[in-house]
Structures are given as structure tokens and as C-alpha cells.
Length: 435
Ligand SMILES: [Zn+2]
Image (cartoon, rainbow, N blue to C red):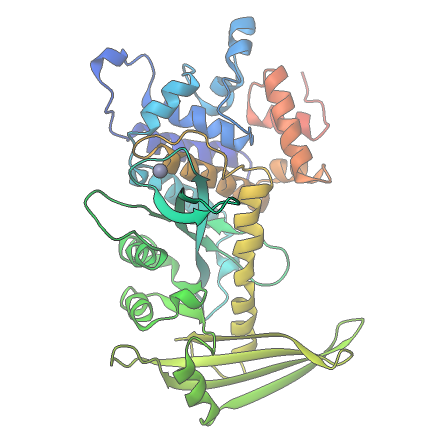
């Protein structure tokens, strides 16, 4: 398995950063390269620092060398305020290349194919997730919501939201890999607020070419289960597997009730209790909206616990994949893996190290979005390293807890100089490198 993966990943980010348009005025002195701002900020997310610290400056003053230069290739360290100001002028699209190049590393290392589970497609969950909220800090692009405080006064809550797109895989704990998200943001002169569905439609349109070769099956909650999104996904060459609640799509449930559905029941002993998996499906159901018709396939699943004598889980989906006794279990496993985006993506980013909701700098234009993207790129790099970089995985698994591993990385890089990543990972693994 690969060595030097982190170097290849960082080279991708550096290439992307080097290609960004430089909008700084001449008065700024151009003392720093634009990549120094991007990589300087990225290092904060990679090591999961809770704020934009000037964390390598003291080492530079003391030793005339620092880890930002040796590990991340930052030539000259900009201050936190300068980083915020410069990143505020970078449009999110400028960083998409970093996601592309990282995914290319996964592909080259042969790890992408293991994610193909539905007729050779890769399941990707689209899901709206907040990454910033405040009653004080805001910009022209914030979404807003009126809410009442304890005294009953109405206050405006400002927030930022995005449609995250994440590769998932059902089954054993498996690394989830974020793709490029779509930000939900208000634009000048528009009266109506932007919303998750519109952002999802933009994502489909913007990313269809980029991800065509991957062959995606898009999964989403009931909000995505509408005629328009299904049609746009098919037109973009993507498949879908979308949660379809009976109460919000009564016409589908009705057709199934009176239709010629097929069923499959599988009994399982899980070591403690007998479970019955009940699958039922109908192919070629009409998904009616605004008088238009689209034929979709409907799958329903119930998990019956024999000891409790009750159904403990129930869900239903629509899909364009053909459903039969050979495919239904795989489809349901994928549909049930949708929760992974809540648990292993949103929750980890917000509450387990990545500090996604911290305010690293709001900016007037894009700073908060760029910080969010760099945080996602850090999460992606870590996931890829767990998948394909032995050295990293060894260092990572030598700690019982993930946060201890990141603490060790922060400790090592704050106090000691490391010539390269190999040296850092070996040290963190508890092995003293030669020489
Ligand atoms: Zn804002």
C-alpha cells in the first residue's frame, strides 16, 4: 500500500491553490504566495486546531525553520487576519481541483472500486447540513430564520448551510469520502431564500460532467423524493435511491397497496435474537407530480424482532434500479447506509475534531465557505490516508481514540521540527526514526 500518499494529496492542493486568481492589490506587497494562505489555513484543519492560530511562528523565530514549511510547503507564514482577508476573495469553485486530485489518488491506488455496490455504481448521499449559525455575526449571503428566545422576543438567526455529497458504503465501518458540496446561499437581488432542493439541483447540473465516469447512485431523504429531482438525475446520467415516506407520497403507497407486489422474507439469528427481514417491491410505479409521469421502482423494508414481537425498523425508497429477489437486499442495505452521512460525516465534522461549526472567520463573501471546504478536504485526506497509506494507518491505529492521535500530531508539530511526514508519522507511532 502506498507511501507518500499525503505528499501526493498535498501536491494536488498546492497545484489547485497555485492556479487561483490573485485578486490582492499591489499595496499588499505580494509578500506571500496565494498558496501560502490556502496551505496555512489547511494545516489548521489537518491538525484539527480549534482556531486559526499562528501556530508555527514561534518555532520559526526560535529555530529558523518550521513544520508548515517542511510538511505543507508554506514558504512564508501569513497571519490569521491576512489569511481570512485573502480567502474571503476566493470563490469556492477555485478549490474544486483539490477534491478531484484527491479522488484521483484513491482511484490510482485501486480503492475506489470497492465502493461500487449497486449495479456497478457508487452510492453518494446528498444531505443538507448547517455549518454556521449566529445571532450577531452575518454577511449578505447568510440564510435567515426568525426564532423566539426564552423571553418570547423574536430574533433573527443567521446561518450557513450546504448540500454535502458523500460517498458511502453499506456494511462494516467503512471510510466515507466527501465530494464537492453545493453551498446554500442567498444572492444579491433575490427575494426568495435559497433552499436545499435548489442547491441539490445546482449540484446535479454543475457536477454531472465531473462525476460521469464514477457512475453514481444518488441517495437522499424524503425531501429529494420528487419528480423533478428524479428526472434531473436521470438526465444527468445518475441513478437514484431515495427515501419515500408513505405519508408524504400517498399516491405511491396507494398504487403499491393495490399492486402486484413481490415479497421476500429472510430469517436471521444474530446471536441473540431471531430477526425477520421483510422485503416487498413493485417495479414500474408512477411518481406523479404536476401531471407528469415517471416510472420508478418501489422498495419497502421491515425488520421484525421475534422476541419483542414487533417491527423495530421500517423504511421505503424509490429507485430506477430494477428490483428483484437478487437485488432487493443490496438496495435496502444501501438505503439503510444513508444514516452514515449523519453519523460518520456530519457528526464527526461537527463534534469529533473538525470543529466544522466553529467560526474561523465569516468574511463578507466567501471566507466561511472556503474554511468549510478546507475542513472537508482535511476530512477527505484523512479518510484516504486510512484507506491507502500504511504509515498513517499505523500511527492512527496506535491510538485507541482518534482525538488522542490528533492531539499527538498537534503536540509533535507544536514542539518539534519534523523534516518530513515519514518522520512525523513514525514518531507519532512511537517508533524513533533512524538518525
Ligand atoms: Zn453569512
